[in-house]
Length: 139
Image (cartoon, helix red, strand yellow):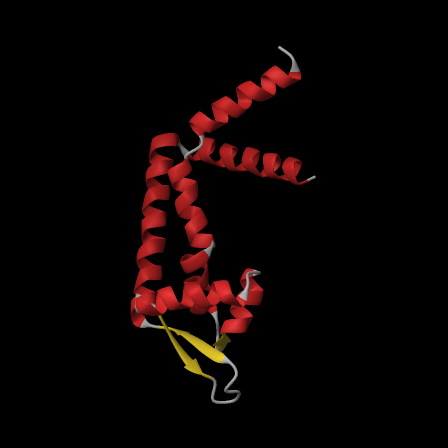
């Protein structure tokens, strides 16, 4: 088998074996709503919308759309800064804190189930190999 043929076979196998649902849920936690709520939960003090955009490395327009959605869901509250009216202060509400807690608990439950079904050694081996593949892809 040539390297090209092996590469094609590997791509086909990866397409069939990657736990997409798991990675999609993890991605959602690290991007968008999950990331932003986590950022607010860990923040000690005032968080400005502009700072969120810089920290997430996205446009302020994208953050505004995300904040609109989250405010509509009751997860956050936005208010003008008392120090600088041009800035918007973003705070986490109790429903936002509840969402974070429930989402983290679900992730932990699913990971425990994964450990039971697959085994700790195999999960850690998967993580080790995934890191190695990621490093190779980033070179």
